[in-house]
Amino acid sequence: MDRENVSKPLVMVVEDEAALVTMLRYNLEKEGYRVCEAMDGEEALTVLAERSPDLVVLDWMLPIMSGIEVCRQIRRKPRTRDLPVIMLTARGEEADKIRGLNTGADDYLTKPFSLPELMARVRALLRRVHPSQSKGVLQYDSIVMDLSSHRVTRDGRNVHLGPTEFRLLQFFLQHPGCVFSREELLDAVWGPDIYVEPRTVDVHIRRLRKALNGDEESDIIRTVRAAGYALDVEGTAI
Ligand code: CA
Image (cartoon, rainbow, N blue to C red; front, side, top):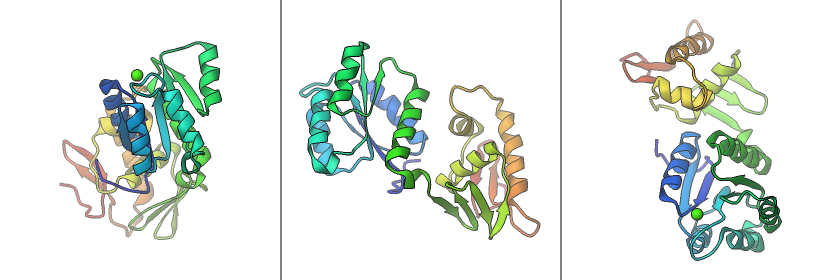
């Protein structure tokens, strides 16, 4: 699922612990973000000059230049002044938290942090800064999803969806043509921490199909045997 799509927000991860970078990249990409990374403070400034991330996840303790200093530099430059920064740190003391926020971080998480918590904060910050990116319109073939009004149409016909079907379709629309296993859909739509039987996915797919596919319309959800589902006009089950 490594397709460059500039409409997806770019999240920069600045962290020197390789395992944490890998874990963050994996989960951010799964949430539909693009990810770029830097392993130390100096590299962070270089990457910032080359790319235009929409948000930075910034570790406090970094080699060469601390996260605090990187944050200061981000705030100093007009181009990055308003860039949202989430600071990560092993320090849990209130004084440090205040210092981090004073330096210009928008938010602050103490390690070890919970992944859903980080994702929620990433989403919230991006929504605040780029309302248009989270409130846009998703479209694939004859299906149009308006995220601000929560309306879905197919060929101009209103499609009424329950909240889970809405999120399922939103995820498919963000990755049209891609096949996702039930487990991947559970992670993406229900969240990795919620335990739901994989068969539940089938139930919601059935409801989504029923709502999407009118009498004369072709089935736009492709079932790939032993693999999963995809939103795909190429249609027909394999
Ligand atoms: Ca570190």
